[in-house]
Image (cartoon, rainbow, N blue to C red; front, side, top):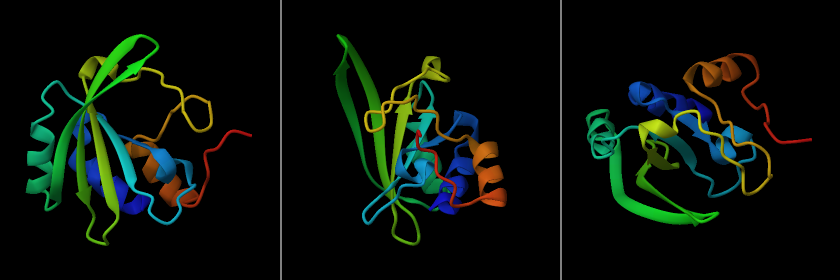
Length: 133
């Protein structure tokens, strides 16, 4: 799944893609999907790029969540890889690049992997886990 993730991230390279979720953590299980965050002020162009890259976009959804009194809005794109793994791409505005987020599952900082970091992991230790001790 990490190999498929890096291919998708390369398609979206100019949008600062970051692999997050269980594929980043190395804690995938049956039904896990590939979660990628990207950053742009024009979210509608992401599905166009994905389709041009040969991916089938299943649906797009705007979501709002309220965290600590702040309403956050993001655009979610759902797709599937050739090997039938689910993909969820969360599009956030450009000003959120590098903004720290807390993992709701583990409670640590949600860092993820950018393209270069993921390529390095794939070369050196493809099954490495990123979970707090």
